[in-house]
Length: 463
Image 1 (cartoon, rainbow, N blue to C red):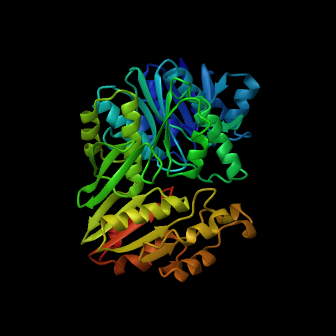
Image 2 (cartoon, one colour):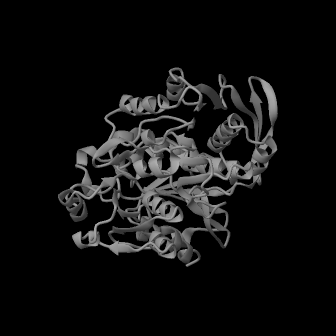
Image 3 (tube, rainbow, N blue to C red):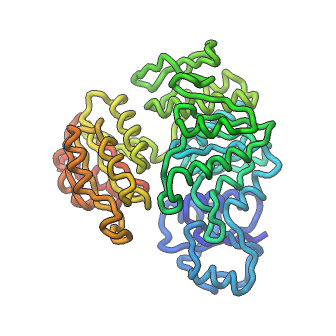
């Protein structure tokens, strides 16, 4: 079967293309401004990619067109598909029908931690002999890929609450047929598609309602909204957390040079001591979720323990991009205020004696709006210096609706952290690079490329 993907270079779409190719389908697609790493990844897999959207790309007509969720009406290829009545669908529907249906589906959902937790779940289940196929939202370093097809009986997938396609505005995770569902946390996000927090909770409530009675909901009870949602589940619930009230609890958490150690208790009884090279209490929660999920699936306990210890994280999640002359450059995907706060807390715990410099680019659709104006103010308290860049494409929002960087800088300063507004990556590098010294840790937080600021900082150090 010939699948043609419109918007093929998106992370999820490129991963889907690879899965389809590994399953034996013919795959091609198109995108705009095609560039590495996705372009080279697709090329290495023998998947042809047209640069630019043109009607002639669909000649001869493929068997099925997959329309990416960022592709709108008015796109010339979408219009050709509709005019010519070429069969079309969404990426989430293809994943369900080609890969998930008939297999044990492990879906990791929640506002934060989905990519790390789903990657960790895939690695743990792999080490425990399940040979899972998977698709996650980043490059899982243990596998060197964001996807894998094994043909086995288990599929691990990151369950995104964002909408599916222009013709299907429901969340992607509603397509994924969860047998084991991990719900880490629920907070307000994606203000571009959810009107308020109640709308977000409704989406997750519907997700929980998909889990069959024979299935399992692994529920993060440190999140009040998850506790509320779990109470209405028809499936078995395995609650986890650091705070009181959860069945699976991490206690005696200790920070060491090689990561975190913690003891797991189940209903008050000792379940054993575990270690992870990841940093931060949020990663302890991620590990705890996977331990509980793996136990519910009958995984060998010792294999789970060893897999946690050997997990190498995900690219762009507290990833050390370089260490030059005693200066550490860390890349992280954080953009929600909770993610920014927890990332900086984790880095502070891991490098307590360093000068911590946080560089933040408001880039996501929600982070560029005023909805989190006050929440961001307390997100930088663990940094010694906070550098706030200009909003990505600020003109997309009216002045009265967009995040005010001036107000944010002033609010951060009021909480005792030195803060400065520097609009562009090049200006940040010019201002900061020559002033970086041994013992500095720089955390760059953006959910985009940020004009290659990491490489530019490395070149500027000592200049």
